[in-house]
Image (cartoon, rainbow, N blue to C red):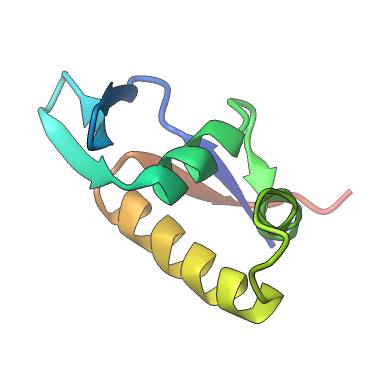
Amino acid sequence: MHIYHPEPRVILQRFPDGAVLYTPSNETYLGLNETGVRIWEILPKEGIGFEALLREVAAAYPDAPVDDLRADLTAWLSEVESFGLLRRESAVAA
C-alpha cells in the first residue's frame, strides 16, 4: 500500500477556465480540470492511502462507476507524481 502526499511547496492557482498546480522553486506546473482540482483539494497534507482517497473521490462523484474512478484516479496520481507535485511513499505496516 502507498500513501500519497501533496508536496508542501505546491500552489493551487484557479482561473476562470481551470486551474494549475505550480511549484515556484523549479517553475513546474500542471493544468487541472475541475475534477483534478477536486481531487487535489481532497488530498490531506499528512497524506492518504489510495483506497481511502478512492472512497473520498467516489463520495464526491456518486454516479461514476467505481472501476472507472479507480482507473482515472490511478492515472491522475501517476501524472501528478511524474511532475514532482505529489510524492508516493510505501505505507509502514502497523
